[in-house]
Length: 264
Image (cartoon, rainbow, N blue to C red; front, top):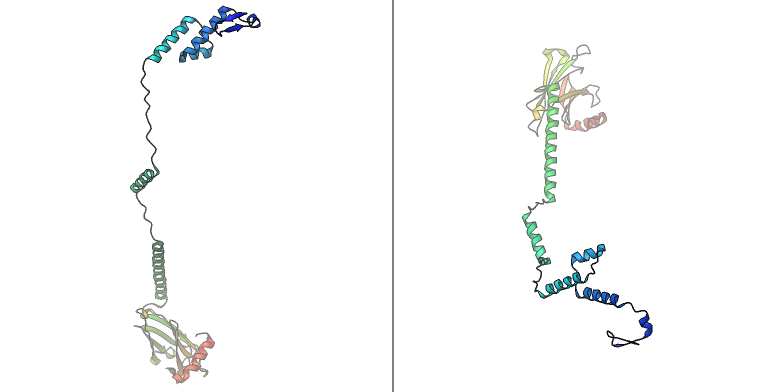
């Protein structure tokens, strides 16, 4: 039985048989003690990772001494730059509102403004259209009827005329007054003039064209004179070699005849 100093108790013989030699034990104990006492530098760790492990006693002692010196010397705590604390939600909202206030605000117009603009545009377009239509109509009448508005027609009405020598009629709108001139049988010596209705209601009444047509409306087999202007009709009856305005009691028969002819 042998006595082990490190453990302080008797070692059985079975254990002594497999015990390694003293030199190797002392070497490992020293190496292990040195490794536990010191912390290898970064260079040592790198060399150890690469496989260059330093096991010489004097190098390990130097490392232990340098480590002990470093541990004994006072070191100042490392200074770290502290990041500013995160902004609170209220501060973020204020900063956001401040950023938004600097931006120019876009003005929003009321929808009625666009509706009003559209209505004004439609009104202007409608006015321009009316002016254009009136101008075209007036120009057309100027080409056909001239100024003053004059209409001419030949017809056989039984006043000393015939198909070879029909009577000549002229209807003139002279200062808004309708006047009809008849040259019976195309003979200026038998010229008659009839005064028709006066036109009212517009400043351009003197530009209204007047037309004439001849048909029997009272059933006496004589062609009567129908004066047409705007959307109105005036009838002069053929009586006693000339034309006269219809009496009130003759108006119903005339109206029926005009409706039958499609003139009403």
